[in-house]
Image 1 (tube, rainbow, N blue to C red):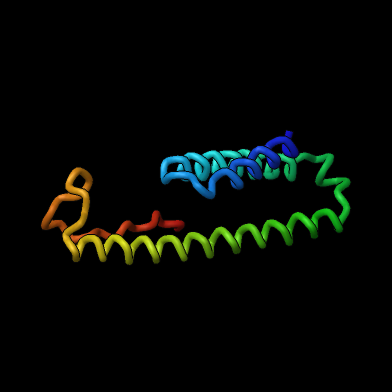
Image 2: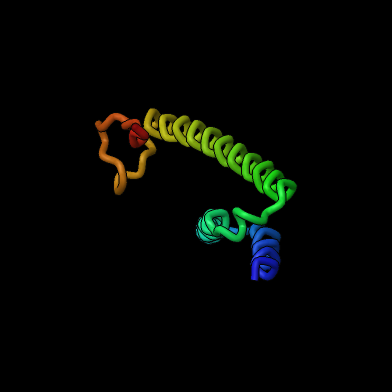
Length: 118
């Protein structure tokens, strides 16, 4: 099933070069949903006593190294995107180009606070 999904996303990626914004949002959301399901399945798999008892160190090393690379890439994407979007929204606000249906004039751009982890 994962091989078929990989091929599907390869095709979606190739076809996305001329996609409009909505198509890109739909593709990204589908990818996120699939990643979430896959990560949950991996987490469940790593809780299975048969896996815990029998998985060779080499396979665990591979999973860990790949997991770390994915995490690092995701965090770098989040930092890059959040910074760029903040700058873009501030520019739109300064130029008076905020969409009035989603933004009230006279309101300063608010900074979204992250939920506490403590």
